[in-house]
Image 1 (tube, helix red, strand yellow):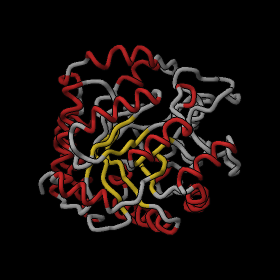
Image 2 (cartoon, helix red, strand yellow; image 1 turned 30 degrees about the vertical axis):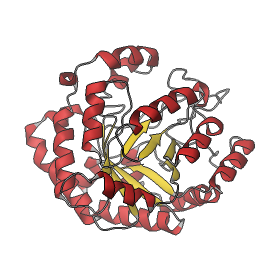
Image 3 (cartoon, one colour; image 1 turned 120 degrees about the horizontal axis):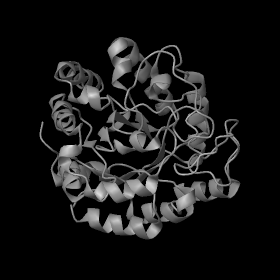
Image 4 (tube, helix red, strand yellow; image 1 turned 90 degrees about the vertical axis):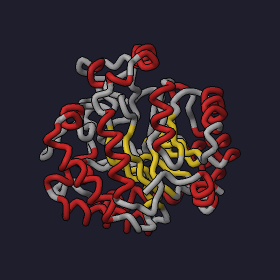
Length: 351
């Protein structure tokens, strides 16, 4: 199966409503493993929280899978995916699944997950499969089987919006710079434009994963997001994608500049990550742009929970106290909004 033509992806996108949603993980899960493992999969919480998302006007979700859950229990994992899709569909939402991810901690393990570190953003998020597994020739067969089994099983499922092959390819600096918990984001912005493609240990896996997804023959398009200013890497991500996706945690001027640049590729756009209240990436500034341009958008987070993404990357609060301004997320765990005015604005934009 080849890359979708411009005409094909434009026709597909024209048939969609304005896609508005969030990156979702239930508040009871510390990472993707805890979300999907049989012992901690929590459909009751998922059903309740997706009801709140639907009430806002959301119609789509971006959700991370994990290869190790499949490795330990492929049939059980697929059954839980089916149940999740049933719950999301019942709430009127389609799902974008992420297959692999380079972010945060590089040595994932199954079983009971460690509790969150108080006051730290995504303190237990687990990369998939991690750089060591990505480079290991002996693990390529099982990673290929994972991709083809998951994509092939759901290749004709209309509840799935599209496949996000690899989240933030090459973003392997976060755990290195944490040491272990002090996250120096400004240094990341300095390093990223200068790193060479050869420094990305997962590059080979990404190229293979794109091929594996296409060989599985899905009816849904695929994507992999642009997330940094790196011309060579971004060309690869764009040329590998049917529909172009991107992340923006900066300000509205940066967003509009990024949109103008990406539009030159001549394909529809999705913003699959945004919302950094501390950095002026906010609903009030970003949603009107997305609506005007009919760009699908997925903010990070729905309900404050064990991932603790209400805390900033740069400013942890080790005492676990409430931050002066939430970074991500929309609701407290009991369903009350962080900012009622923000909720009203969001609902009005979705009408």
